[in-house]
Image 1 (tube, rainbow, N blue to C red):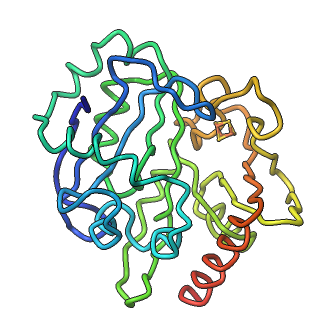
Image 2: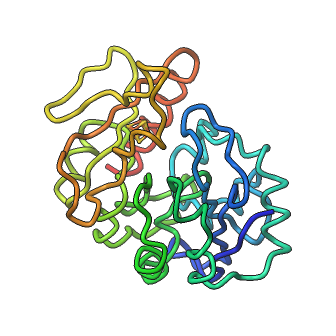
Amino acid sequence: MATLLWQGASAQNGGPIRLSACCVTRASKNDKTGDCIQYMVSSEAAPPVDAEAGRDACGGCAFLESKVCYVNKSRLRRAWDSNMRAEVEPMATFAARKRVKRVSHRLGMEGDPGSVPKRVWVTFFDTVVPKRWTSFIHNWRERTDEQGTRYPAADPWFAQFSMASVDSVEERTAAKALGFRTARVATAPVELQKGEIVCPAIARDDVTCASCGLCNGRAFGKRTTVKDIVFPAHGNGASKVDAAVAAAEVRNA
Ligand code: SF4
């Protein structure tokens, strides 16, 4: 059963969205992330497999329309159904749960945390006070989808807790100019730029997001490293990523 934390208008397009937490009463079973509370930003209009409704939660993300998004959205149907039946739980009640205090938080199992208004995240961090979390936003800059609809950029304040997901070295430069640390998907041959490291979980089986926690933006000034992260894309996925990046670059030129 998902725990609904907020419902309201998307910062991407004003559509009705919900922020919910999954795996609140049991351990999550994701080998890459480890045991985390998993947060989902989703449209009220339709389950996540519906790409059009997905705009409410994901805006103009090139990976949504190109269908190379790494999230297996068909698996989220049950979580979405549960979310739609839930009543909002006050943030303070949620924060008081033992597991919420204890484990890591993955703020974007589905959807872009940048679709949720800044004031909601301010309340979240003031109330829940997570010790460890990961977060990635795609709308760190304005984006345009293939129909020409424009989606606004999130406030650069999001850099305090979230990485900017970038698809090229040029995007990384632009995101860093706004104050973000970056998480870059790179296709072969991967050339690390100054200040970048490959996600440790890719090279080592004993590392998960829950144990690593590097992808938490600027951690509200508490971060001691400014390393940016690179995710190498492999196989068939690599060519799809290349195509999505090329399409996004044309639109954003
Ligand atoms: S760098 Fe760490 S927190 Fe970021 S994705 Fe990799 S394992 Fe997770």
